[in-house]
Length: 514
Image 1 (cartoon, rainbow, N blue to C red):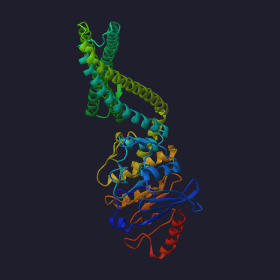
Image 2 (spheres, rainbow, N blue to C red):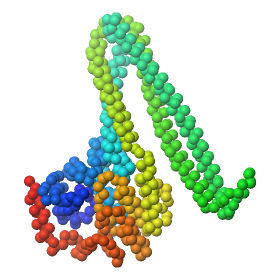
Image 3 (cartoon, rainbow, N blue to C red):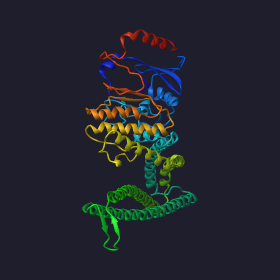
Image 4 (cartoon, one colour):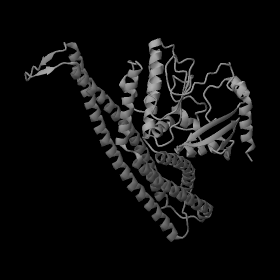
């Protein structure tokens, strides 16, 4: 009803083409939303129509984003900056029975956004990065796409210019000796500019290679440290849990679990740092490759200009001048186009740098560390509460880590993940905290003790001041505050005795639409 279609819809429900009406409140202000196929109408507390929409992405979505304070903007597949449709916003709050084993996938048609949108949405929901950060990021993607198109146009113009220069380089471009000298001077100036650029590129290549050597040294040092720590850990495991005498200094050291765990933890930190260094090395090698390619391009252009300079020493022929007049005009037009394209690309690069600075201002490492620490604490506690002992801490190191398990422990691990995520959102998000919907939590035929654990957990760990809507076949005698709605008639949601009242209310709302 709010514009987010579940991932799996029963054919009978689709065939019934139901008219749906939802009453909800935001900041204690009541609203009504009515959906009929792809038509939506929103009403205020006195049932005045305040908006009608026949599209979600460009209609209902922006309206709800403003109402629910989720103003994040991301680039779609067409590279247009949009507010993600409601399905993206409601993802953390809805766990459908058919999506327990694939977190954040309960809605259909999640294909509009480009790139790593799940990470962006999680960072937004959990308060790690604000709306403004993603607006700037989306603007950068759009400008970069524009630059790619401009660069493609430039390549065409450069090819045309090169062919013109090759043809015109074999003859004098103007019978006027002053103009002839001017063109030679222009070529000399272009050659000097390319020479200066070449020197800059050479310095860049040297600097990047020096940086690469440092990375490689650090990587070798880390690999050696990991190997030594691994040997220490294996040695500590191979001897009894007792004191050890140092053969060098004679000091006595403990070989308890705590010391062995410390060695293992140091090795794990080294592995994390090693992966970061390797990633940095790959990025550095990519930069070096780009610099070499640019250097080669400049070298080719320098050689071409030198060749043209040599050709300028030949004899001036009238027919050459006549033939070149048309080419000169064309060259002037192409040059103007190239100048305009270069100017536009340069202006875009300035805009990108400004936007990057803006993004940087919203990246607070301490804030992110604090939020992810809180998330890990919740995960650790909730896994214990649900009796899940086989999920390693490194699998939930960050908000965007993928938590996995097998057998009956898997749905309990996912439940811990969802509740941890919701706990963080409840504490740090600046947008509206929506009702939590859990559908069929008794997955994988849990035994009685684990099912009791799940029921207790769902109720006792529900985020503070939140609304929970739970769909389940049975809940035993577990007590909780709230209303039970029991559906006894198969394949019927609206009960027959309520039809007249509901029909009257919906028809009344439809009549208010002008």
